[in-house]
Amino acid sequence: MGHESDPPEWADPGVPRCGDGAPLIDQARQIFDEFVAAAEGQKTEGQLVAMRTALDRLEGLWLDAGADFAASGELADTGHPTFASWMRHRCRLAPAEASARAGVANSLAETSPARCAVRGGAISWRHAQVIAQTLPKVPAERRDEAERALLDKASKLDPGQLRRVADRLVHCFDRDAAEEASIRRWQRRGLSVAETYDGMVSVSGLLDPLTGATLLTALAARTRPRSGGVDHGDGHATASEGGRDARDAKDARTPAQRRADALAEICSEWLAFGETGVVGGARPHVSVIVRQETLAAGQAAATEAGQLSWVGPVTATEAQLISCDSVVSRVVLSGESHVIDVGRATRTIPPALRRAVAARDGTCVGPGCQRLPEQCDVHHIVFWEHGGETSRENTVLLCRYHHQLVHRYHWRVVMDTTGRRSLAPPR
Image (cartoon, rainbow, N blue to C red; front, side, top):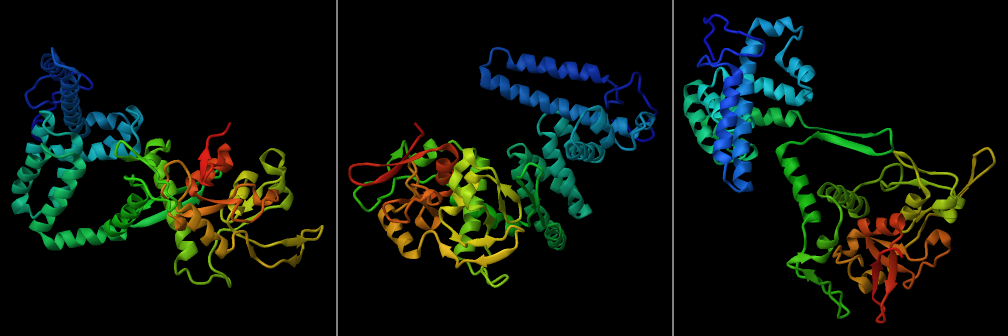
């Protein structure tokens, strides 16, 4: 890359003023040839590593050339105000990706060691991004030292690990700056929760490190595979498979789905058992309004949806799932939808019955599941809204995930000769 005083050396569009004067195409060809030579005769693993190095080198070359392109008059001729804008439209990069690459490209001109490391394939552009964002936080007289330290670590760590090293390094070099950065992170915190057009709820946001660590710890505790099985108190135990919990081995959910279910369990438990206070004369709760005919008809024959608080319509199946273990109030309406009578709120599962079912089942009865009673619903085997009795014989413990399998995918509760209940796939 030339100095500001160097004259432009753009022979063709897209060919940068490379430091050694070689055209961009020649350098890219050299990288590919070196990859072929390094990968030839190796097994797949060696070839993949060699290819990854080549891709990192090509990315570094691309960013190096991009920095020259952005500094030249040729970018202005395209009509784009910034290099990031050009990347978004000409290279079809997402806005965040384009901005990140533009930031690295601009920093490469000022951080020669990092630039050489990227160009040589020793580190990726993501490593260079961490270094570029860290150095301005370090006192000017110690930036060379910090850069050498980060480059040494970058050759051994992934970008996320390097970020943690960089944060510690900033703290060591300038504690006041580290404290200011911590305050800026905290001020950026925020959480957005909104209903989508298709009836889902979108959650996005940024959490400060302490809150983020708290959330990750809570989710990990709920999604961590359990080993060794569990004693159900009746001589039966859930077996583990190859050192992994049977539930984990048979769980078809993706990691993201398991985290979503874990968050639902955590929130449900807090509403049920936490110190929530009183809102509007009652403890905070999720409510659904649904016609009795909709509940009794089932999914196939239901003609009217239920209404769930905050998010709107839900199907008969979803309303039935909620009604399994809930507080129910009868509301009688006149023909003009005016309320003329509100019945006493009644739990579909009384506390004494919940304790009895918990003592009998011990945990969720789903395949290999070990969710504790506090983490489960009490499910009516013959649905409550279909006339099923609220009795010990007609109820069973199910965690949120396995409860969904029964209502949505028609899994069945079966009982062996000893009276132990379990779940079986639909016939």
